Image (cartoon, rainbow, N blue to C red; front, side, top):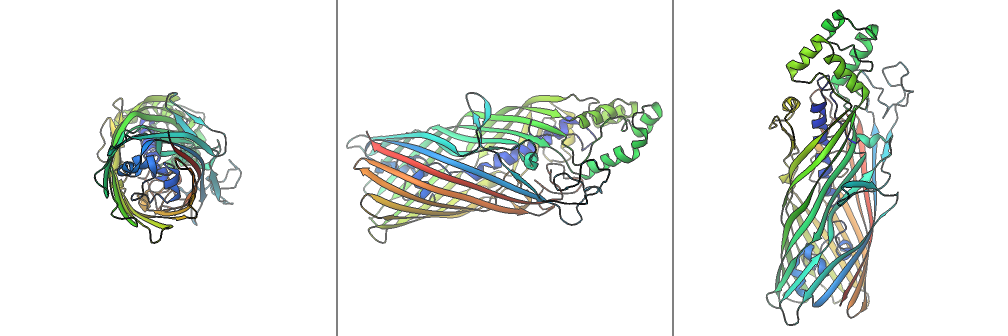
Length: 562
C-alpha cells in the first residue's frame, strides 16, 4: 500500500495511472538520495564539514581520498557509531481562488465537515505533515521495517588498514553508508500522497583499497566500492485534476437522477458512466502502491591524489566514479472502490465497452494488480578537490570544492514485465516511451558547492573542530516536491578529537543539515501543477507548499593500532 495510480485520466484504466504514478513516486524517491549523500560516512570528516580532501580522515580516506591511506602505519582498525534523527515537515495551504473544476472542498486544506452537501470550502486551513520515525530496508529479509520513534542508532561500522613495515603500500577496506534515508508517516497524514513509507539505501559493505607513497611529498590511491542499493516505497495516490473534477460533475450532477438505474437507453447515451455506485473525484484516494527494487552488487571506484610539499600546506583531489545499476523489483497496486466501480461500470455497458476497446483499455479491473518493474539507474560521478593550510602550529583551515554530475539524471526510464496498451496511452504524456516502458523527464542539473573546515589543537591530546557546507540543489524549481524536501541546504558541524595514547584516537562529532523550501501553487510539476495535462504527478495541484528537512547527527569513532 503506498503510492497509487488510478485511472482517472481516461475515466478509467488501472495500468496507465498505475504506471505513471509508480514512475513519479520512484523518481522522487531515488532523487531523495541527494538529501543523505555523505552525511554519516566518517565522524571526523563530518565535524570538518566534509572538507577533508587534502586532510584525509584515517582509514576512511577510502571514501574521501584513498591517497591518504599512504600516511597510515602498521595495522589499524576504525569503528564508527552514529545516532541520526530525521525530521521532515510539510505545510499545505490554499491560495486565493483555489478550486479544481469548481470544487474547493479538498479535505487537506478545508475544515468543513465532510459530505456536507456543499461543493466549495467555507473554512480553509493550513495542514501539516510530519514523519513518525525511520524506515529501513533489510537486505536479507527483503522487507522494510519501521523503527520505533526516535533517533536511529548505527554501528559499529568497521574499517581496517595494514601497511607492512618498510613498504610504500597501504591496504584497506571499510564498511560505510554513502546514502541512507527512510521514514514512515501515520495513516491519516496529508503527506501520504508523497510517501507513506520510504526507504532508500546504499551500503558499501566491502571496499578493497590501496594507497601508494610515491615520495615524501606525493601519494596516490584507489578504492573499489562493492555496494548494495535499494529503493522501497509505499504511497497513496490521488489526482486533483480537471479531468477528475469533470468526473465528479458527471457523477453528482448528470448521473444523480439515474443512480441505481441501468437500462439500454442510459448505457447507449451515457456510455455506462452512471452505472458505478461510487464515482470518481479530484480529492479521493484512488489507489495505493507498494514497490521495492534493489541490486545486490553495485560496483564503483575512487581515485585520489595528495600533495604535501611542506608542513603548512597540502592539496588533494578525488574522483568518485558513477555507478551503473539495473534495479529489479515488484509492485502491487490496490485500487479503491470508486476506481473499480467506474471502470467496471463503463465496461459493463455496450457503448462503454466499445469506447474502452477503441482506447485499448480493458473493460474490467480487479481490486489488485501485481507485476515486476526494473530500471537502469546511474548514480552520478563526483569530483572533490581542496587545500589544507596551517597558518600556525595549532590552527588549520580546510577548503574544498565539490562537483556532482546530477545532469546525468535528464530522465528515468522504467521497464515493465508485460506489454500494455495503457503504456501506449502513457506515451501521450511522456515522449520516448514504448508499449513496455515509460520515460519520465527530470532535467536535473550538475552542481558545484564549497565546504569549509577548521581545527585547533587545544593541547597535545585535544583537537577542536568545526565545519560548514552550503549544499547546492540539483533539482530545478519546477521539479521540487515534499517527497524530496530539499533545495539548497546548510550543513553545520562541531567535533573533538582526543588522543587516548600513542596508538589510539577517539573522535566525537555533532552535525545538523537543514533545508527549507517554498513551492508556490502551480510552480512545480512534481507536486502542485494545475492543468489538464499535468496528471503525473501532482497530488497537491493548486496548493501552496512549504517544506523543511532537518537531519541531526551525533557520532563517535574509535581508532587504534593492533
